[in-house]
Length: 183
Image 1 (cartoon, rainbow, N blue to C red):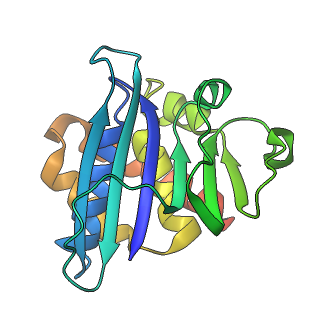
Image 2 (cartoon, rainbow, N blue to C red; image 1 turned 90 degrees about the vertical axis):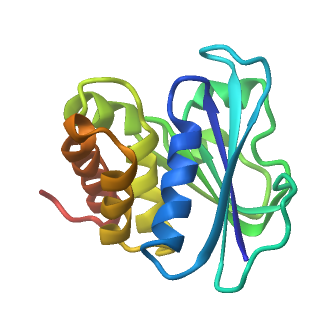
């Protein structure tokens, strides 16, 4: 089973990204998946956790994800107040929305750290600093846990028609950026 934890802020789409990934993996990817949030104080800007589980077998564990394979941080300032690496498995992956280099974070665990300036991509493609679909494209590229077409289908199912194409483009730009493909 692959377990993923998303760190974001309320109103910035962290749970939407977790849900899109679960939908892409299950309905459009042929796996089983769960996606669920964990909210602290329910207000815009508060720390929000999202979780996604993906497996080829039915998933019977419905608890919060405590030990995960991948951690995705939508807002790097969360790293100042939360240990986002807590519970990440040995050899796991930490993906951070940041213009910094991975080594700038001085992570002392045996995990892979990857950064992407998702904020810049979101501003250029979406016109707003909401990075959830950008980071979704990045994690798909880094891990191969879902196909790009499955992500597009999930976006078509969940998002309003007027924002679908821009969000699919944001996914594509991030995916190609990770894969080293220029548009």
